[in-house]
Image 1 (cartoon, rainbow, N blue to C red):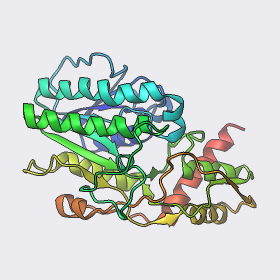
Image 2 (cartoon, rainbow, N blue to C red):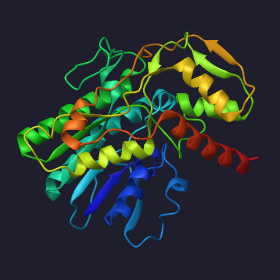
Image 3 (tube, helix red, strand yellow):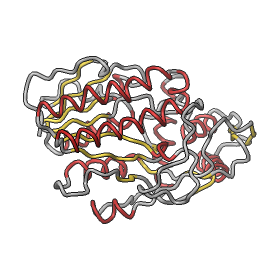
Image 4 (cartoon, rainbow, N blue to C red):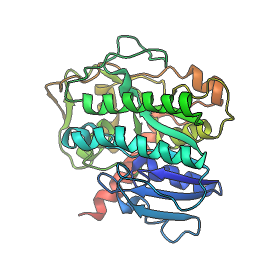
Length: 317
């Protein structure tokens, strides 16, 4: 297959490019490098089945040859990024989705959208099934990301229902692993970098809010299975892709301190506005539809991620 990956130089996008190339597909990577980095795909440059174009997908997207699938992963995706880039986040969710699904329609290609657990907002049910409509503040500071993805889902479903585009929606839960940016503001990367530097680990609120962390290798496997699963009547509906193992933020901080061998202490700061109190996917649908569930436990995934950051920080000394 010839597959377009937008946001392909980002954390998830670059791992997706790796996986698809190893599976013998051809990959066309589009990224404006707003939050992505060429470093994430430098090992792929020159590969005979890989091409990279620096392009903003909120502008017209043209691919001058047949395409079998379009995977739309372009977007700021960490709280720090979308709080600093609110307009760009809204534009790539709206205009970027419109341009890329328009490409899929024109090419008669399959389209997969990277959605997010943030569509559930600060949920009132736990775990969160795909049938839950969410509890989102549309005008809060996090609303630029939440609503961009909610709009994108609505647009994708409209293109499926009205134009017959073969679409998929992956609701991605907290993912971690190599190629996360040290400064992206996410829980795991923040804690690991602070622990390796011997700095205090910053926990917001009481630390009793929960998250469910999925290692990137498992996440990509689930996403690709969703892309490749044969079309059925309900495959177009959203699918949660994440790890249902729930852990408190304070527990993850303590585990990272232990695994790094750090002497860092934990400090507490006020909880940011609209920060969700819990996050845990119901993956029943993914198990039934894709035969998928995560296999890498938290300790193993964290150990791999710590080694990545340890190596990266040593290179920047």
